[in-house]
Image (cartoon, rainbow, N blue to C red):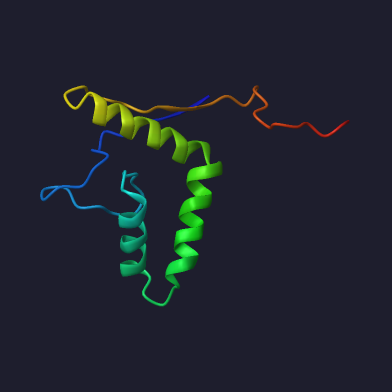
Length: 98
């Protein structure tokens, strides 16, 4: 089993700037702007499509959105997100016949 936790804040501030390898919560338009500023030769509509797809199908993105809603509803609550991996569980939606 793999357990992944982070102690970094999910939002940026004056004291804590965003960096690669860490997870942050941004509004989708703000996230697109930040990606474009770091990748100036890319097309904006491509990033917008990717952002939409990630939020729709990626369970980790959906978990971060849920955590964002929790923080907005309860701003004084300390929130921790933990990802667990159990190699004995088959998380695929459909198993191929054997």
